[in-house]
Image (spheres, rainbow, N blue to C red):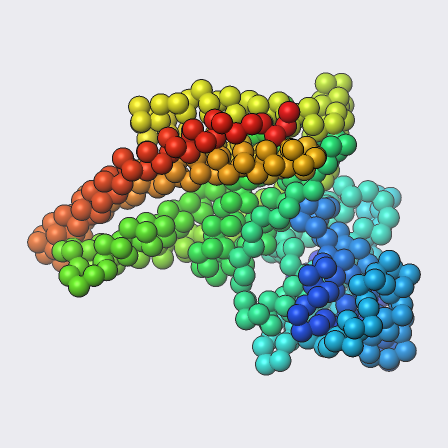
Length: 506
């Protein structure tokens, strides 16, 4: 904080600096969280003797980064005045019954310093908040910087953010203060966050569609960085899903992203995926294979030392995830990716072909990509039993891309028939993807077992212990190999169901 306040970025803005303020905000909802279910938050903020009521519609994961709809009014006291909601279009939600059930749930207390930054012809508000969010006896610290574009170009906003990131170790965040408060109430300090709905539509341009999709993916990655840093398995998994979804989106829109900046983002996303990979692989192996082998009255010989070594490797892999998230490389990637999505070189490419591709409706691109990957799977998936693990892995990647594309582009194709077909299409594709995923897990597990069998004894035990451990690793590998035939049968049935499903984009 001291380094930030001494930075040249803020020293040059002293004339536009506002006086520091202490803000106390109380958040209201019903016991059943009715406002939250409608994507709304209601707060009353006290600044000195002044009270302000704010109703916010939380920004969608696929809307511009951290955009929110907001209705704000000055009120006479600390209790909400919901008559003010009439002009916000929210009057039907704020019924008399709901108003009677509203109660304070949590509060934030922050010390705010605000600055006005001028960059080019743009004006940017920079606010530094330090304090706490508290719900009953539970609390957590707040230390954040918020940048808001008051007027001008978004490009200047990101320039300021990137200058700031070079001076202090800021980390991109998408979790609002209200979301932190609800997490405290629910007792979830680091909740994992799944993929959000992608709000594409038939009249969306290809550029806008890619931005909507990419924002949603980035939101999922960033929303899970705290859980992943804290070693929450599901948080690491969901962050990896967000990374894979974003990399799939780059592949689907590859012809629209020919520039060097896009290539650099793609390479850095691949690096992050590799950093997160071992933690997830070891976690799955321990949960699905080793634990099942260690259950029962008589544990198989050598499983205990194998289990210990795997857990040690798992701890190392989780530390690797934490170090990656803490690194300047990861912090820069998240911020650079946000800037690239909104104002990257690809959005300003003057080439006529590139401009035409950006401006064309998404439906044509969506149909083309969906058909392309469907044909690939139909062609190569007929003889799954004849494929080696690497070839099956490639089919798995294709099915995953088609699954993500179906989710990304689903809203583009409207109507009951399209919705019905899409449901059946994704169901068959999902089964195929799951079975191919199981086969890939077995291949990964066999490699992990082979490494354990050939590794020196990390505990410094006798050769007998080492050989017993190698024997146990071989038994674990054998257990996995025995599952292959049954899963291949399931995969062939899933392929047959997928092949019968009609394309929902026609």
